[in-house]
Image 1 (cartoon, rainbow, N blue to C red):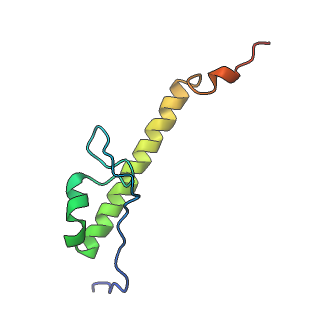
Image 2: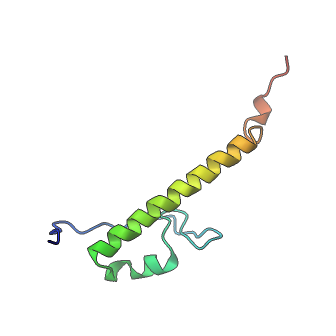
Length: 83
């Protein structure tokens, strides 16, 4: 049985509209194809795209956290005090 959709799934666009080196939008993490086809996708396809965007964002945040762990002095270096 298919679930009945009452509301349209909104676009995840954040209005940043810049792409990273992998071709994903820095604001919503959609690919070019996903952004351009958004209005023609079914609700099921839109849910899948939103899920993929969430996974991409999570991977980005994990990579960023790992980089900060590997290089803890890159930020706040001016606030380091010698005792």
